[in-house]
Length: 297
Image (tube, rainbow, N blue to C red; front, side, top):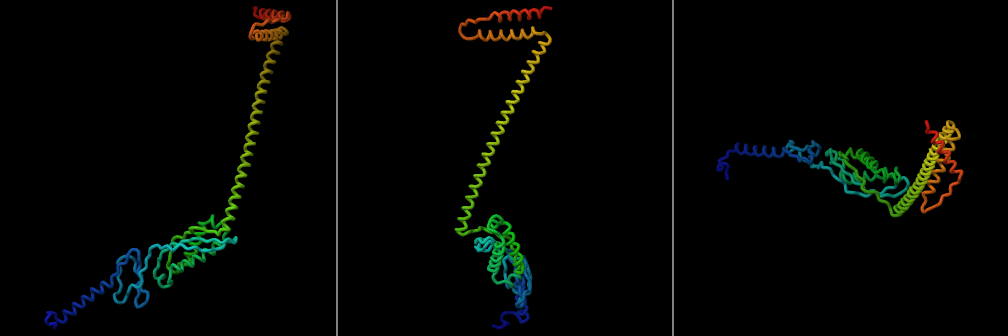
């Protein structure tokens, strides 16, 4: 088929081809980068640029996207690392590391296997840190161990364009012999604490009993003192009355006491015969005379 049959001249075909070339160049020069990735662009085998998420332009036919790198946070598979503490106890530590790539140009050109490199680095750091600590410190200060591992790992992987986001120690495992020895030690410590608690309880009971007895003695002493004060007051009243009225007041008080005694004796059950001495009758008479005489104006 001739060009004349198509109705297209030579210049027209050239323009069409040029337009197609421009369209292809535009499509090859436009790169849309997803939010979770970054593109590493090379020109003639050398690093040209790193394309961030969004719409980007490159030089068509010269530049090419050599690497598409995910910048999402990644988790290394949980690994078990053996280490020896400063008190010569073998422990197996389960550790997991989270990281993300922040500078893809460093990651793709400086390290081949990122996960393997980080795992090896973590193993060395864990051995070094646990070797400085005793077993009790490893189990009780797990947060400080995690902090040390994360800080040292961040320093060592910085040249690879990697940011360590988290490091987690999931478990600290011991061999059976060490576990049995620790269990015996724990049981002994619990027994000791129980004995101490029981002894403190007995001591407290004795202290409370002593306080109760002391309180009872103090109350009895107060009662006796009050009774003594009352008796002293009564004696003083009687003495004052004797001082004012003489021997008659004393005889009157004695007669009253005798009357009270006879009344109490007469209130007994059944019929009784009360024999009153003549001296008592004379005392009653004297008391009544004194009482009557005291009431006369």
